[in-house]
Amino acid sequence: MRFTGYLLALFFLSVPAAVLLGQEVEIDVEAPTLVPVGSTFRVEYVVKHKRPDRFIPPDMGELQVIAGPTGSVGRQELYINGQASRVDLYIFTYVIHADKAGTFTLPSATAVVDGKNYTSRPVPFEVVEERGRGGGRPQDGGQGGQQQPQQQASAEIAQDDIIVRAYADKTNVYKGEPVRVYFKLYTRVSIAGSEQQKIPSFNGFWTQQLGTDHYNWQKETYNGKVYNSRIILDYLLYPQQSGTLTVEQFESTFIVQVLVEQQRGNSLFDDLFGGFPEVKQVSRKVSSATVPITVKEWPEGAPDSFSGAVGEFSMTADFQNDVFSTNSAANYVVRITGSGNLPLVQAPRLDLPSSFEQYNVKTTESLNRTASGISGYRQFEYPVIPRAEGEYFIEPVKFTYFNPRTGRYTTLESREIALNISPDSTGRATGYSGGGLVTGVSREELRLLDEDIRFIKLGSAALTLRSGSFMGSPAYFAILLLIFVAFAFALIYLQKRIKEMRNTEVVRGKRANKVALQRLKAAEAYLREGNSESFYEEMLKALWGYMGDKLNIPTGILNKEIVREELLKRDVAQEYVSHYIGLISDCEYAQYSPSESGHMAETYADAVKAISKFESLIRKRK
Image 1 (cartoon, one colour):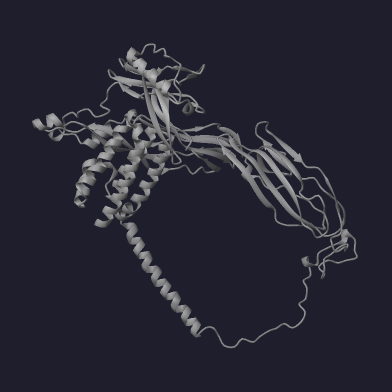
Image 2: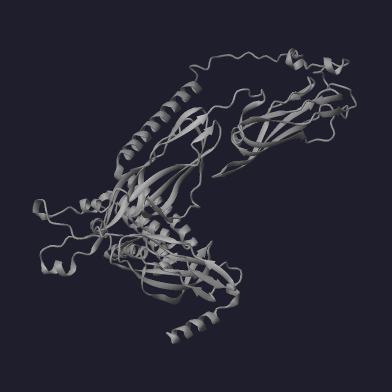
C-alpha cells in the first residue's frame, strides 16, 4: 500500500500545471440504481481535473463496507467540435455488501483542492429482493415444461418499472396566464426506444413547446423506489377560455431490454455451456394521468384599451425621427417589454390627425422561452406621412394588460407629442407635383382626391382589334396535349408510389440508414459530452434499429441469432456478420461497465463504418 501511494504521488506531481489551469473541479458519484439482496457492488467517488489535496470519506452509516476507500488514477478522452482533450480522474472506490432490502442513500464525500471544499451529491439506490431480473431459469410447467422466452421476459418487468407522470406548476390560473406542464419518465429498466407516441392535443390552450435536450437522467426516489428519471416533454400552455380544461394523457409504447437466461436442454453440452443471459426486447405501453386546470375569467370592467395581454409589461412610444416635413416618411414606434403572453399582444391603437397617412403596422419581436414563461419585447412600427405643414399634437397611446399576480388591470399611457411639420424640399406649402391634393386650403380641410375621385386617363386609348379565337387554334390543342401527357405521367408515378408505400418491407429498408444516422448523430453528441451511459444507449438503438429496419425483423423477435441467420441468407460474408454482432455485444457490455468509457470514440467509428458497409452490401444483394 505504501509503494502504491508513492506511485500515485509521483504521478500526481508529474501532471503539467498548464493542463490544470482554467478547469473547474468536479466530484461525481458512480453507483448502480438497483442492487439485489446479498450482492456486492462498487461505489466510485470521482474527482475530475485536479488532484485532491485531501479526500474526506463519507459516513456510510448502516451500509456494510467491505473495502475502501481505494485510490486510483484514470484519464478520460473527450472529443468536442473535432478537438481532442483529456480529463484526469482521481477515483476513490468502496466495495459495499447489500445485506437487506430497502432504499438507501450514498452520503456525500468531500474533496479538498487548493484549500476549497468540493462536495458530491447524495445518491439514492435501492436493494431489492431478487425477482429474476437479469434472467433466472424458468420454472417447468405447461406443455412439455417449457416457458416461452418472450413471456418470461414480460414477467420480469413489474407494472411500476416504467412510469410516466404529468406535472403542472399551477392548476388554478386566469385566462391567458401561462401554465408549465411537463411529462417525466421514471424507469428501473433499460429502454431501447419508443414508438406509437400520442401527444396530448391541449384543447383550449395556446401552446409553446420547450426543448428537453438540456435535461439529464437523474436518480430519484418515487413511492419508496429508486428510478432513473428525465423530463421527456415540456410545454408552456396559455389557456384561451375559462372553465375547467384538461391536459390529456400522454401515451407511448417503450421498447425495454431485459436480460433472461437461455433455456438449457438435457444434454451435458447444454449443462456446461448453456444458460447464459440473453437480451430480450419487450414492448410496454404506459400513459400518464390527466391533469385538470381551472381557468378563471378576467374581472369585469376592462378598459377599452385592453386586448387580452396578460402578464407584467412596460411600454415606450415615440417617433424615430427628429425633423419632420411634409410628404416625408416617419415611424412611430411602440415597444412593449415584459413577461407574459407576449406573442399574443396586439398593436395598440394610434390616433393621428386627418392630414397624416398611416400604413400597415410592422411587427418585430425578440422572445425568450423558458420554463418560467415567455419574456422579451414586441415592437410595433407605424409608418406615417404628414401631408400638410403646421403644428400638430399626437394623442397618447394607451395599452392595458391584466396582471394575474395582483388580479387587476394596469393601463400604460405614453406622453402627448407635439410635432411641427415644415414644408418639403420644394418649398411648397402642401401637395405634391401633378395634383392629388387640393392646394390653397387650410390643413384641416385637406383631403386626398385618391380616396374618392380617380383621375381621367388623357390621350389616345390605344385600343387594338384582336382577330380570331384561341379555342380551336394550334396553341389550344398543344396545351391540351401537354395537359394529357402530364396527367398520364402523374398517374403512373402515384400508382408506383402507392405500391411502394404499401410494401412495408421496402419502406422500412429505405428508412433504415436515415434513422440509424439520426441515432448516431445523437450518440456523437453524448460522445462529446463524455456521457458514456447515454452514448452506449444510443449506439444500441442505432445498431439494433438499423438491422431491424433493413432486414424487416419485428422488434419483438429481434436478437443476434436471427440477425446472423438473415444476413447469411443474403450471402453476407461471415467476417462482416461476426464483426457487427461483436460490436453490439461490446456496446451491451460497455453500457454496464464504466471502465469501458474510454473506447467510445473507437466504438463510434466502428459503428459508422459497419453500417456504411452493410448499406452497400445489402443494397447490392437486392
